[in-house]
Length: 306
Image (cartoon, rainbow, N blue to C red; front, side, top):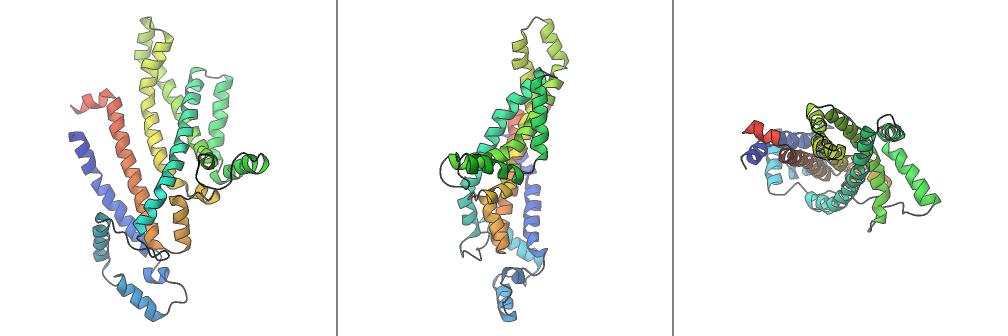
């Protein structure tokens, strides 16, 4: 509990910086009232809108109201939908979490076994195949892969739908598009971590004591090499939450990314602020969970802290 409380206190400055940046985005392009209202709005309408939302007040005073509203769950009202921005964001979160969860699941189920086999059978066909997949996964843009998968499995073969909707079959193509890039990173990290662990003294000592190779790999190599992989997976999950905007747009997936793009096009800044704030805080929370999980697995961290 002491460690958890300390980590929670340490993220308070990060949260404050995130909220300040998110709120400040509204003022980067000029007068918020002019940006939010349609081009044909009159000067009187702009002035009334500015006074209604308090844009005439000092910046820090407006930021204070923003923080107070955030604590109370009030992030403003959508200009287009005339509904609380936070409720609109919360409605889209399940779809985004579903897409992110399937994407990271695909990446883990493919990346860790492929990276492990690549490390255990270096300079073999499996190793070369893993290298090719890693290079392709990290160099191929998501939108290009999305169009290729859509053309092959939806247009030519007719196996899967091209747009989002209820049911598992609708999430396969967008999840595979995102997961392929993450698979490449997890494969490379798993391979390098296992190779590095196999060079350690405790592995040579275990082999010298006559421990079977299978036991050495499972109990010594994998347990110690999986730690940096967990950190990468946690960071990539946060990246997927915020980086699925293009994929959601292509596949018309009803998630937070699609809502954010539509809000930007409609100049609906309360929704943009709420969405960006949620994604940023989610990333901070995921890092916190990763640190706690890392500490739970690695006893050396607990020993160094005691």
